[in-house]
Length: 81
Image (cartoon, rainbow, N blue to C red):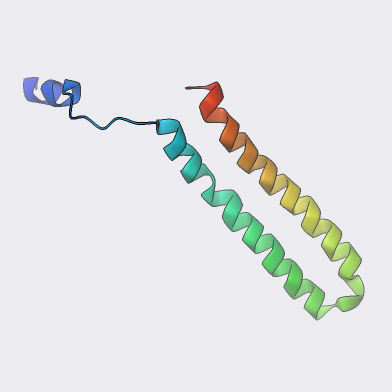
C-alpha cells in the first residue's frame, strides 16, 4: 500500500490540464452529431428537392443545438477547474 502512495505522490506523475482533455472528449459527440445532421439533410434534399427549405431550416436548428452543446463543453472546464 505504501508503494502506491509513493507512486501517486511522485514528481513523475502525469500532470497537465485535465480540462483540455475533457473538452477534447466532449467535442467528439457534437462533431459526430453535426456530421450526421448535414449528411442526412443532404440526403433528404436529394430525395425530395421540393422540401429543400423545410429540410434546410431543420438542419440549421439541429446544427445550432449541437453547436451549443459543444460550446457548453468548452466553457465547463474553465468554470469548474
